[in-house]
Length: 474
Image (cartoon, rainbow, N blue to C red):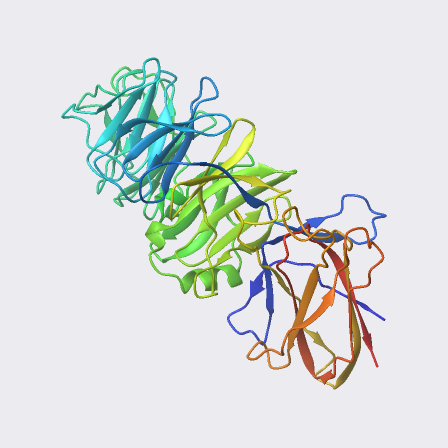
């Protein structure tokens, strides 16, 4: 009875005849000990544990933790809230816009918010006064960064970026700007990383540093002109001592990059890039990064799908939830901050802020579909008779709190014998009641096929850990 490579990433190629693997709400983890039972396992992605609901309408547009003190802020709709440890939201101000992502930064004294318009806002952290920036030399921005005492902004629709006065987000000087001149493309966004300023154009990028020049403090680092820009300013994120973004250049768009030094390295693969090519509104893609259980995850939210890159393995998986029509769509989390020792994320559609919690097995009460479509089982297109399939999966975990005590967990299996065109009916087996650790998760008399894709699904609110599968062929 040979083991089959059941653990793996999402990789649905342009033609499913080549590869039709799919991994949804599961992520692979490679064993670090050479004598482990298997070389890898798949674990369930964290559930969403409700932390607080911000009043108002619309989704959570941005989250930020102040650089001094454990103060967490959120923008929902047009409202800026401060989030309290343990829940609770205090209104601090109102923006003129009420939709679309916002970019937030602080200088230790002031919190600055920009929203992709000509407006910007300052919250003074000492007394919580909130005011619109009225200096005529403030031009608005999509993104704001902080570095060496200055707020730094992209000037929308131009090749320019500009800065505030030192430690004063209300004051600007009309000559305090510069241009990314290596190429005439517009600046899409800025981010500060390792005391260097990354200026992303729509087709090219540059890296700047603080030279201390009294006329304008930032200068371009020689040799850092990058022939790849950014199509989605809110996809730019810092993680794993690097910068990540959804790219574009003069030849096209839709590849995902990370910086290695000052060189971009492609981290998307052909399957992910093909999926991206099918999505609309790439300019509106949002991204965030977080660390949990030794993994650094970079999450990209498209209008109808969520793709996640794991820097620990270099592999991609999908995240999502069912919509009202029962279709799998994007994940609910749209932005992230570490606050009060928790990974907090904001809902893209309403005012909920959640904790990303590996020990929570629902998305605030909604089921999480955990799906794995494994690689093809084939032998030179000869008929194979499938006597049984046994999945090596942690059994006896029972159902989560709130369900019937001791209720049986179900594992559902279906398969396709025509390259994923059609699927069999679902075949359910028990994964054991609480404590039934020796329960075998096995299906018998599975027929014959020239090639076959097996697909496993678990939706019960329990811990899911899958380490492999054994297929018996007659």
